[in-house]
Image (cartoon, rainbow, N blue to C red; front, side):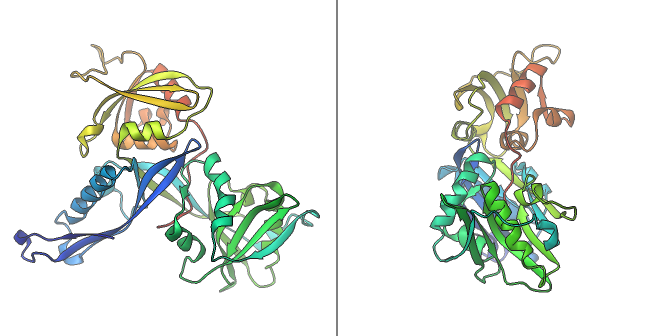
Length: 365
């Protein structure tokens, strides 16, 4: 936890006026972990709202995280304006799905598969299964002990964990809370093979005498949704989380990129909060890795006379770069609404550089 105390000018010197929880962690993009800082439970004393304490707290948190080596910061916003002013952009999504259990039934389970109750006190086997998801998706966080506790005990009550697999070993798991109010909540799941998905479908459908709906959190390409044999799966909610780049060179060099894409792109970045992020950066891509070099920045360096960019140059704010970086918003969409400037060559390169699976994250912190 981090707190902000009022100064003597506020009339309550030393009093706690704002606080927030901070979660150091890695967040995966392009198949590689990027050092990140999750922020949660940002709270301002109701009697002190409107005095800038929340903004001051967040500025201090972001500066501290950057000094500690974090390249990114991520959060779920209660409100957008304060965080967009701090340079956060839309980073990805989290879907809440639900379905009647019968809708998930895909017939007899695979004959070569198994289902086993698993001890939830040790998350190491689950983390090993989940690691393949980290490397093939964008936006997922690598859970520490606290995040695993949140995932498996979302309301403070341990979930029941079941693993699925075949002769080669485990291929997935689900963690379920006890049924309540005719609903079964899946607290966490990871299904990395077709067999694991089929086994999970049959397992969840087996609750149909006790419940009316199964609920779970996932991404846009959720495996239970993709393999549902009947209509009836619906989206209960879709939340966007926000991302902020704290260190432009570190963030760009830490993430992975498509291995066959080669090229150079100049990013002309503006960041009102962190001056070190403002300026022109040359991003060189080869073999799935990036090299970043700061360039001298003259006035209007990204533009020629008449407003045309010189070569593959993108001009954008740190918030827009954060959305582009995660892959949540492409360069053409950002240019369409005026959040990015650049010619067609630059946009085509950026679309290739930051291509990949749509970013999502089921974790709450």
